[in-house]
Image 1 (tube, rainbow, N blue to C red):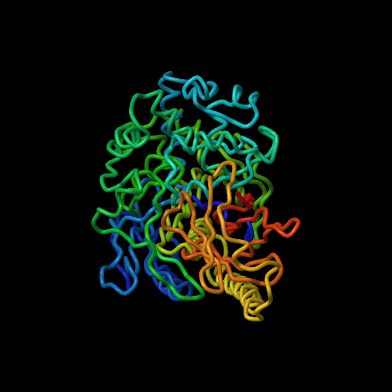
Image 2 (image 1 turned 60 degrees about the horizontal axis):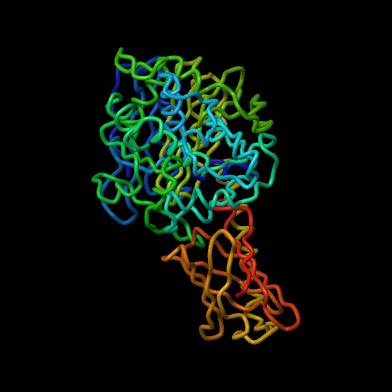
Length: 510
């Protein structure tokens, strides 16, 4: 679900090789001679415990390999059946399910959302009345990218509460004027799928896509992965230290990013996508459904490339569309707590690529995609992973240096504008609810009404500023300013890491 966060700034122990029908002589040398060395080096460079790579060419899997470990410090290796959470690569499944229902004339993608979900709300009543199903899947509701996401992930809000709260958010932009990545739109689309089909979103995927494609290990809901066998653990880096973290609990917004799958199962998805919806000669998805999910709907923007020709990015129904060296690429990325993944199709080359990794702190999952793509297109080798890693190390060092400066300010023991007790109390946000702040020694401790497992420590930086360190490293280290009027604390501004949400939340003291 963090799929577009990672690349806005960039452009932004091995499993045995399986042998497939494609003759090695027909494969690029990078695949036959260099892939294993490349991935091994990258796992070490990026501190990635494990990865899985699948390449489908001309209807056949020509690469199906697991690398490294399912969990840091444990012996179990990744293989082709190891489950990874795929994050926002879920969105293409959701878009396909709704397009399939439209193809069967059970609905139309131009139907008003309120026809199928009367409880749908938006801040502007006109938008509420006129938004259509296609708007939900194409990020054109006027929201800023990730607007509201802090409230949706790892919280105890129910799906119904999220839909209600979504209606209280004021979009930053006018309706259909600007592309803004909106996870809640896919949640609402999933609710419409249930209203249209009579089956839940998860049941629809299971019956209409997973079962006919023999994706027998694929799980629709994040709650299911904890009880599954042969699964990768989630990992993140915290101040350079790799650690396992809990799986993301995102089922209240499941249609945006909750699927877990393996490269074996995803190879079936690729095969159907590259053969007009057919799997093993049988139509699973009508060709018109495949075409409809790839019809451009939203303009994301122009997009360059450091080496080759790449000009535009568009968005369809859960797929990103772009040009690359004269070919169309249909792709998506996925990021969720502890995982980043990519799925890439080059329909004209009959080529599909899946890269799954079990840490959320890497660009390798996308770098390898480009390396494989270039190899099949006969383009020069570029060393994307090394280039990305150099960029990563530089920016990470800069970020750590900035945090170091903030901690140096804390260490100066500068006096806050008021005694710490004056900052304690209950603070309310009109959509989220409340946070509680209490004095704890020489700092303040924050608790969150709708994030039971989350807390944060606020350390004085002098005046009205405090350094916020969350107990979950995904949320980051941020400066929280407080608003003080006439000697009294009136409000504070909450911030989290940008890849959760860019926008701040203003909480008013009660």
